[in-house]
Amino acid sequence: MDKSTLPPWRCRHRCPMVVSATEGGGKRAQCLGCKGFGPKGEDAEQARQRLLAADPYSLGLEAIERSKIMRIELQWAFVEADIPDNKPCTLCEAKFKGDAVVIRVGPHGDEACAKCLWALSRRKEQEPWAPWPSFEEYQVLLKSHPEPMFATEEEMYVSEPANEASLLWTAARG
Image (cartoon, rainbow, N blue to C red; front, side, top):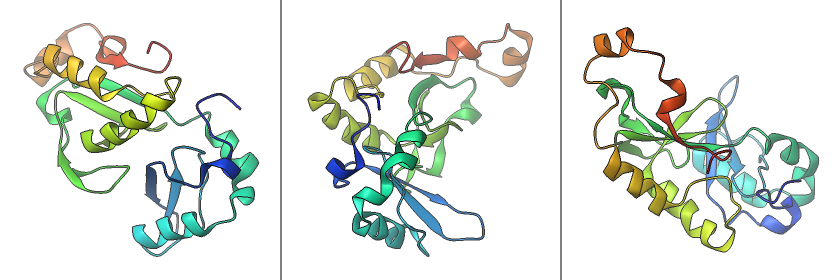
């Protein structure tokens, strides 16, 4: 287990949670501290409550394996259309308006709001090895990248591939 993952039996789920849809309907909550999943619920609140009530020992090895795919990255938006606008946050499900520096969460790069990054940043103060940027790092990048990388999609398509340049913060580069 790496230093960014709490053992599930020590976590007690005071960390932020990701609530996602499951196949066949329903929701499941995942703790970002120990990476444990709770039982399926009918809605986000029920999924969160079921994770909080779950036996921490039952979250063990499966949670540790999933921790290898959880990540938070800061990406410079390519064009204005890439900036989240009234989309639900992957972590808290609140709708939010993003900025040119997009907070990407998880293996599929879903968007998260700045309030959730702020909450994670407070935890990072106690655990500097946590695999996400601090809120202060995010604010510095916002100041230096106030607009998307390209003004238009046409400009984006005729330029060199910019995927690597768009990743402003990753756990590997931190």
